[in-house]
Image 1 (tube, rainbow, N blue to C red):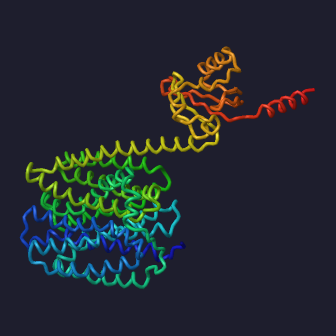
Image 2: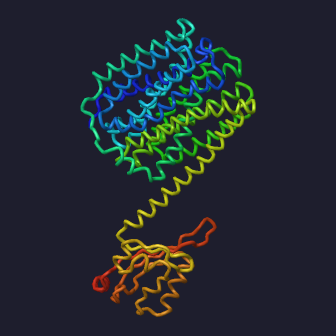
Image 3: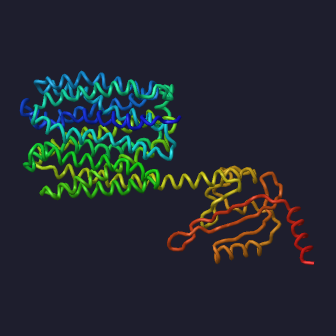
Length: 511
């Protein structure tokens, strides 16, 4: 499907607006609480509640995008969002803010639209970079935290919220007229798509990784403005600028993470990401001064942005047929990752008087993620090696140092007639033909022990009793200290007549 030049920029700009609307309450909360009395707990709920619906709706939004296309999804979303944004601009109580904020979450769910739609227009080798570009939509949060406080000081927070109504109307119209009317649709049922992925452990590991990286991004975006004002005593505008800097760094690192995911092994990038989040969390836990706090936040922003871009490179690798529901589920759980941390930090502050335990918890969870990434990386390497062995046309058998067979491939069964169940646990001697004397095998094992390799022709016996000649190569696989852990035998059946003909040709050529 050839992409229109307008598709990527239109959807990216639409996501920028989506995230800008999603961050209205967190960016203006220091102004809102001056007019509406809020306790610290209520304040945390008001800033966190848009994340709830914005996360949960990402699952059906990914599915619906496959059904009706990104054009209609963005158009409908922006029209519906006019209602909660207008409602918030007239809010008079905590309950009004909760109700409006809940439905404001629709704007956050628009993330699933682009990550489901855009891969249809580009080859797989560009998916990481394209999703990274689309992820620049996170800039919407930075724009809100930067411009909304400045505008609110001039015209008030209620009028500032109403400015978003104009932007929503403009982009609803833009998507209606510019969006792709011929986008490829997928009609697989939601149940079928869920059945195709929910038992895959990789899905839940990727969900967990995104829960940490995107959750850290969202959590810090909603947590920082109020925290900076009240913990460090800086002005509201300065707090907005610093938060915007965090969001901007994380956002611009997202396409970098996607691009690196296309070029390098994504798992190696994620090791760096979670290692950096571990260090950043520890630094925040022990940094009472704002310079050290700033360094820790920037490290979190850099690593979270890289991780957000890299993780979505993994989705089309594992779930190409269920990308819509997989993207929706992963991004939904990532969004929920931004809901709980602010509430947890608020509760810890009430209990302990500081945030150190919360930041240390982030470091510990990130450290656990390092171990899980290593597990996925090594598991994939082992699976690849198994696939290579299973698909090769030559017979393969692997033994331990004592000579007991550990595994065989289908070609082994095809040549010998013995199934894997019949061969595993036995020694290769059960294949002996009886045509070779003991000195032959003694010489083979002597060479294997000295040179860790042997190659030659040998007669063996099939399950049906038929004798056959095979060309066999055996290699000893050593560990880091030079000990042989495995012997790998690779063989193919050869015709004795061909051997004789080749020998005659050699003799004739020497005369």
